[in-house]
Length: 248
View 1 (spheres, rainbow, N blue to C red):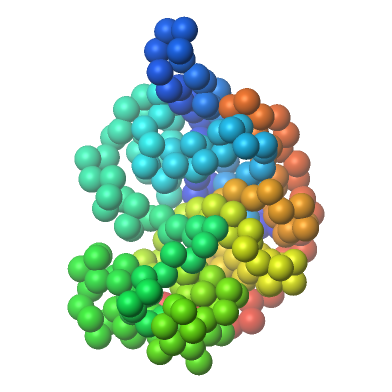
View 2: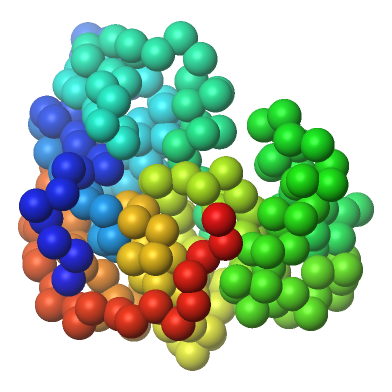
């Protein structure tokens, strides 16, 4: 279990989000408080419509909350209003995204699907491809770096997608149902991989999931119902021993 004496990477305080006004108002999030520390992987669970995706999108600075505070990697970014003018740059620098489906660009090979994020951040082609190759090796899929997405298995494609999420060395990784399209064995492999990444890169990872088979892979499980956090269950995951360090 990562030590919580470090400063949190994600701190959510009294966060709320509503849609509509008056009698048509829907409270999607109500007084949400959440803290995620370096090296932790936390699960976010709840029935459809409970507010999971809305909360993830608020943390990602995609959806503007209605009130509360969001602190990311030590910087207060929302305090009843956005405090950062360039949210796109903030996302590019601080946050990595992993989706239910890899969403790889079909006309780019594995290396370029990772490098494209670095290209958007302003890196040159050779630097971006070198970093992409390092990440694919780190995630044990370097042998598929020239393969097109249609040639990859589901597990291989998800590893390429994870490499893409790590391209800019984010402190925060947000994953929306990353194991949904995988069988139970591959789902556990992906979760073990995310735990390794969290610890080796001192990152905070938040995973939206319905998958009951991976609950023992989380340090904490937050449960949402009708926009409120009901349970924060501490999990006793043993510390992982890094197999090899992440690429710098």
